[in-house]
Amino acid sequence: NLKKLRKEEILKSYDIKEKLGTGSFAVVKKGIRKKDGAEFALKIVKKKNLNAEELMTINDEVEIMNQISHKNVVRLIEIYDTPKNLYMVLELLNGGELFERIVAKGQYSEKMASELIRDIAGAIQYLHEKGVVHRDLKPENLMYASVEDDQIKITDFGLAKCLESDGQTMSTACGTPGYVAPEILKNEPYDKQVDLWSIGVILYILLCGFPPFYDENAAGLYAQIKRGEFDFPDPYWADISDQAKDLVSKLLTVDPKKRCSSELLLAHPWISQNAAPDKPLGEDFTKRLTKFNARRKLRRGIQMIMAVNRLTRAFTVDLEN
Ligand code: ATP
Image 1 (cartoon, rainbow, N blue to C red):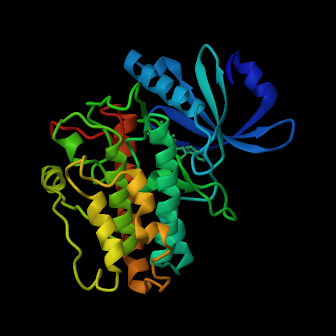
Image 2: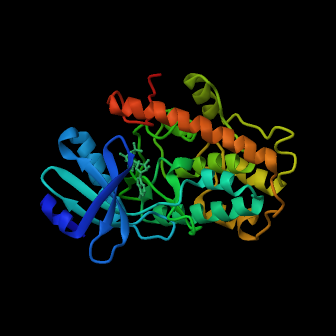
């Protein structure tokens, strides 16, 4: 579905509408397909703004997305490659981010968290089988297609990497502080297990409303992550099942070889046996998650300015700091 065309060609097929968002490389606008009125997200990358390395990153993203078709992963419909721009026609994700929806719903339980993690883990297992490592799993990259739809979608393959063989490892320092695996921070070669660490961080937040690793200071945060230093403080964790805590501990295991794989995650009783309690997590949980969301938004605003200034690719861990 790769089309090398001129801009007029995409305008023949799509009406380009309002801006939906801005990334470090791209502007994303709504696109309406003329033949049937269907709505999509057009990710528009201006090629002249990119250096050779960045162009390669975009090419990787396109190539990876081209091989993927899974109900819990955003779909790439087609690509238009014009002399100036690259247009990625993506499934439109109009239903908001996962954490926003949880807060808006108001009622939420361990059972709902276990179903979400099951879907995310299923998609990650699918990607890993194809040799694709996402490398940037975080709440911002978990979205819904529409308000009515409750199928979670993994997005943003901007940092994803395709491995040639099962034993191949990577060494580029990337990811997002807070969700990044210890082996990346330690500058060690790493593999697909980094995604399982990030799922562990997401699961932890899904159960208590605050992150497992937190420090105002980046060096302090990285030290905590490298040591895998977290706990289940009372009273926030008092009502959470032992099975849920067991799974969090298996995911947030510093040694990637001992860390739970996507297969073991899907086989864990808290996921596979429908064992997670359906009891509401309560008002305080929602309040904490609301606070967490607000802090994230603020941070994202700052990172966006950094991206615009082109000081750094937004959200990339700077190991020098
Ligand atoms: P990043 O630095 O996050 O990797 P990027 O240049 O790869 O940025 P994206 O993150 O893919 O760009 O997109 C930027 C913004 O556009 C997102 O934060 C989101 O608000 C919006 N967006 C991206 N994809 C979609 C989509 N499929 N549907 C709706 N909105 C989208």
